[in-house]
Length: 246
Ligand SMILES: CC(C)(COP(=O)(O)OP(=O)(O)OC[C@H]1O[C@@H](n2cnc3c(N)ncnc32)[C@H](O)[C@@H]1OP(=O)(O)O)[C@@H](O)C(=O)NCCC(=O)NCCS
Image (cartoon, rainbow, N blue to C red; front, side, top):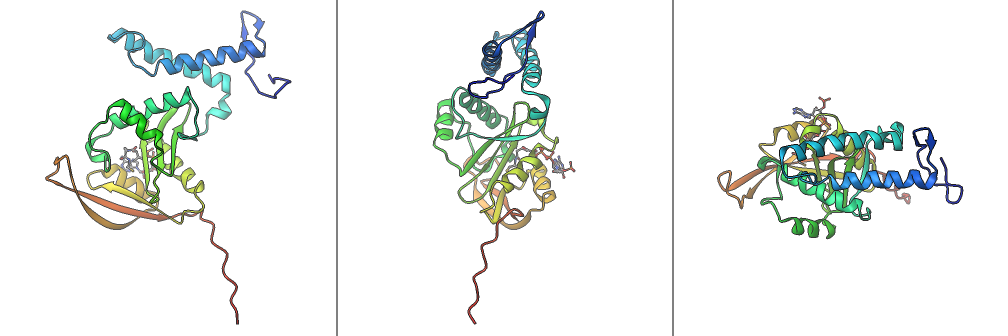
């Protein structure tokens, strides 16, 4: 249903035969979103096995309801949501999601990040806008993140249980399309990150060089081997050719 004043749209919700009005429907949607956000804390319903299980089940059911409310057509497509442009309370949810994503990384998947920061350091980092673009990859909720650095290096991280569902490939394509002024995009990949190497090669990236970096953690003999791959952005807008004077 449409609000006649500002044209906003809310779902048509009926409870026990009673059709909710616009404000009631909006309130219900906001309450569901808030509950979903609260459940971002795995211990929100108790620090035991039962509490954590309830959080997972409630989240699944809430996501189903959100899907009905927003409409399957809008939710079935992947979206990139800017981390920088998102206001609270969603911003808090994304900061927490990015922290969990960082925690989930294996040592060979990290090039720049060495030790796990404290949560407040992480939030400070996110809010410092360290990259040119930083997006949450959203498919019925956040599934990963993608960024482009000021040096035009791309970083993609998909939640482990959502890998292999083409989210990485689609998000990369959307980032390239969203960057028509960037001619060449780079990917720095750790030598032991075979999944990621396969991914970028399959997406058309070509090897540019191999770098040897000091490994502060000293987990792989003091030196880290890193491949630098690059791709020419197919969506780049070519600068106008200068008219030749004869
Ligand atoms: C690498 C990563 C971004 C790929 O995203 P993804 O959503 O899992 O990958 P997709 O489902 O889009 O796969 C696209 C293509 O990549 C290749 N690929 C993906 N996973 C692969 C694997 N395990 N082995 C071989 N090839 C693989 C395939 O060619 C695949 O296409 P196909 O399924 O048609 O064969 C994701 O696995 C990830 O987040 N890894 C951990 C973090 C990381 O290492 N990021 C890279 C640092 S920038």
